[in-house]
Figure 1 (cartoon, rainbow, N blue to C red):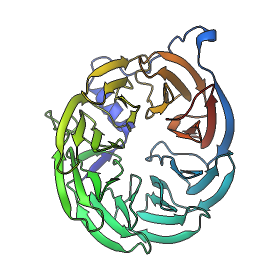
Figure 2: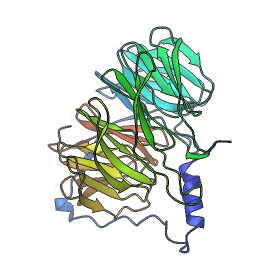
Figure 3: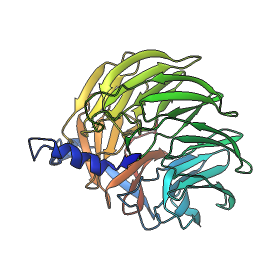
Figure 4: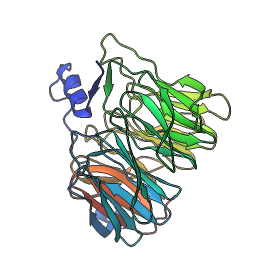
Length: 383
């Protein structure tokens, strides 16, 4: 039987194995520079998205398309927000949204804990079709011009017809006896879709036909117990030109050249279940201990490591101008310098931070309580 553990269950299990009962207590808020030297944030808009998010479920992340931002709640509300913070439309699925939100080609795709995939019109929110699969979907869909591609919790990857929702192809990926509750979202790259497996591999499938093109191991299981050998890839992969960056839990951060067949560029030790972020020359990751790390994108060299936020259950990092931002479980968003990791400021929101994104040259923060807020920084321009 496949066991999918929440991150909270993993932390409890690891803490139980520790000889130090205080090892995983969140770090206190770090000291910031003098107030005159701190970066200040100003709240511009606030929108409520449904009734918020359930800590026991995989949180749906934000998506953008053209002039709209799309968000979802666990009680089934899907909302489109414009650049002025106004709700353009809302759709109620009346199902727990766990698969994230995907927006592309004038379409919005959401997936649910009851194994349904919904495709909505991006401008009106009207449902175009609904497809029921065999297992829940725990990651956002990928989209090409002709396909909607989703990976369900039983390891199956589905290529659905974007116009009708009909199943065009199905590909089975191997599953592990024990895994984190979640998946990395598939990524469309050229004519292929890149998917992950619970055994530490990435695979390329033809997006139209589902035929396997190549596979590459990016993390190697190590340890005596099933818990120690978990090498899930849960954080969103990052594509930059012909390079694919992949982080894994209890594994490595890997850079692959995937122009044709995958070629390893570099690897660094990293245990992470969060999405990656990038600037022009740097790659940023949040590890399983909530340390924030910057890597050189070409060589993989670690350039700095910020450990003052350890065990605060940080969100994914987001690059915004020369800043790097992360949110935490206590509702704080921390502002760091990209070149050094130095903490420059922070501000608070209502509820634990679930997701951050840059939209319309503003930072948008989505919290567990369902608050979606937009923030500006003096002189900041989105990258």
